[in-house]
Length: 369
Image 1: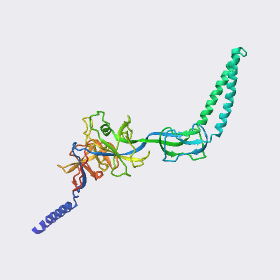
Image 2 (image 1 turned 180 degrees about the horizontal axis):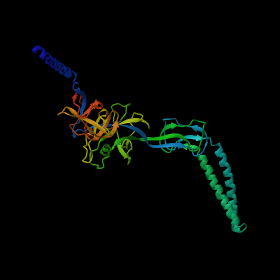
Image 3 (image 1 turned 90 degrees about the horizontal axis):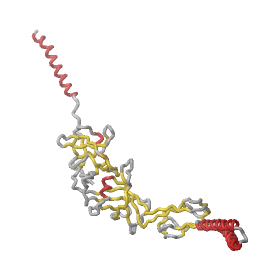
Image 4 (image 1 turned 90 degrees about the vertical axis):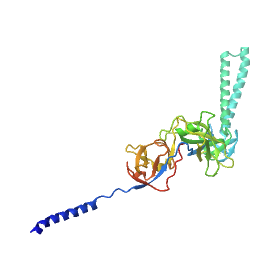
């Protein structure tokens, strides 16, 4: 009887133990520690080199056209040909304009003779002053018409307004050409211009107002001339930023490279070496980080994940992005020396998530620019 009373209690205890074991086995495992690649932001004493895509333009450009219409009789230059100022480039068939000039010359000769006779007769009182005034008006009108015909005949010749290179031919021989239709594009390549879009902070550091202040070394490089540097000189900068990129278009100049053909429309890489200068108190440091480090917050504002060594976790931090260049972005606000930024796996992180640093993958940032 005693054994029968304890049997139900034993069964209950056994069932509770089995249930507890089952609950422990069903508990979810802790979340895995995600490995991440990071980038260490260095101190402000580190200089840097910044690169930007640029485009070549001629210092002077002209779209040449005839001021009169006609059939193109001769085009004397080829694309890429060097020409001198005043050189004949093309001409129209002058036949019709020569005929018009001959006709107006005859009218002028007759009006000039009538005017000369009238001037002698009016002095003698043979003709009235009114008749002489009419002869004078006819003479001046014929003279103006003759000058216009001479000018139109001269307009059948197209001459170079300055020395340069023929960038493009827009027509061929024997085509009918309308007045002011572009025939040739001429570029002055004695000095080349390089157009480049720069963020405000870097533009201020290249364009130093104080002549005694150290300047950044700025030069151009070309794929066709590896290892060569071509010095650039600051010329001017746009006074209004691009509304989309918030960059300013700067114009730099360079001498034509010896032994290298550089034409308008070609691309180059503009390199600014800032190792000789330091940012002023009013210029915020700009850090270059991989574009993969930037993510959008819930308001779609740019931010990065910062690794906290004490908690081995990450925290989101808003940043200000200046410019995207290739796979690199420039950040002017939100970072400071010593920060460790997640540059790979940022899209899979959450606030406070524990992470593990990948070994031997951290690369120091170039620092403020």
